[in-house]
Every structure is written in structure tokens, then in C-alpha cells.
View 1 (cartoon, rainbow, N blue to C red):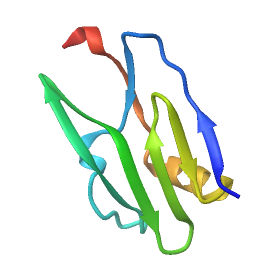
View 2: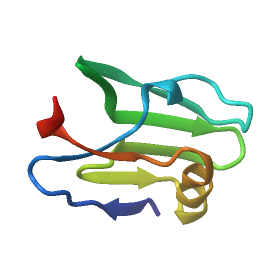
View 3: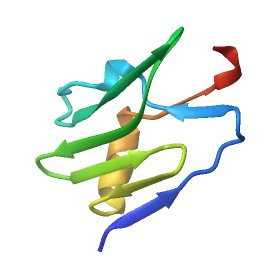
View 4: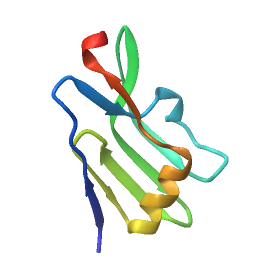
Length: 89
């Protein structure tokens, strides 16, 4: 069964991944996603895979899916989203 976690943010607030996360990491996670840029750089939708834990994918402003809760928790240990304000652009 797929684990899901819904997120909500105020209309002008952002919860995104840092573009530096888009790569293969030493902890085994490989993260892919499109980098957006408008003064700041950020990643909304992403897909992450790990050879042991499985997959995590989605958008931290809406919903994130994971192979299971352990995969989600392991992903967040080192790849937490960043909160910021879209109105700062």
C-alpha cells in the first residue's frame, strides 16, 4: 500500500525542495525534478528513488507519496523541504 501525506500552505507560501537536492546523493537517494527560477530557484514536483527504501514522489505544497512510511521518513531525514514566501519574488 502506498503511503500518502497531504500538505497545505497559505496561498503565498512555498514548501519546496532546494535545487541542490536534484542529484544522486551519498545516502543512496537519487532525486529528480524540474528546477524553476524567478529570482529564487526551487523544485515543486519531484521523484526520488532509493535501492533499499523505494520511492518518494510528489509536491510538498500538495501531496507526497511514498512506497511506505519508512521510505517517507528516511527521505525526510536528509532531504527536508524549505519553507519560503512566493511574495518575496
